[in-house]
Length: 266
Image (tube, helix red, strand yellow):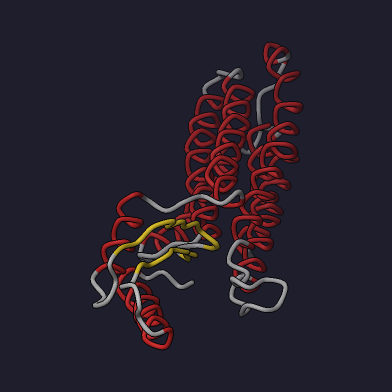
């Protein structure tokens, strides 16, 4: 986040000295990333809070909420603002004056690519990724794609192809919008009770049936209540006449074994 804030200041200053619009687009994109990163960081801490009387399955969905809000910020604020700045300049490209300090613009863009690459490497080394980490990875990959477009645009502007500047800015705006829509689509299902895969459900059922005394399983339902956190409910059948104490012991063994062998936490 500190690196992003420094990049925002550098890109704004460079835009003012060069009048290359794609640098303003990158600054707006970085500013959105600062806001999103802060929000996702808070949600990651919030999601680790234990269950309470109002949230009996914990606070894991906080990460999905944060990712959804991040998607809204990306699409509704930064993408629209970038389009608003780029479209008029697209029709004024023939009147554009020769840009100044092109080498400075190239250096700032390269520095931005390096700063963004560092957390990408860290995230890719992590095997298990919650919703907030996936949202951050999408934002980082979006940034790298945008920086490649910006680098290409500045190089073309230096050669006199002034249309490359607003074209690249509109490309950046499109990338921002698409990444926002992806985050929205990926997280809205979890907030409305997305079920785990059929293979997971079948494993829960077969594990429950493997407990001695269980004759059958029915009414099995499961849903995600957080990143990689599943709540499952099921009925088990035992032999007629089984004492209630023994039936309770069998049910407890089912719960313990399913939790241990499938990772189902609730």
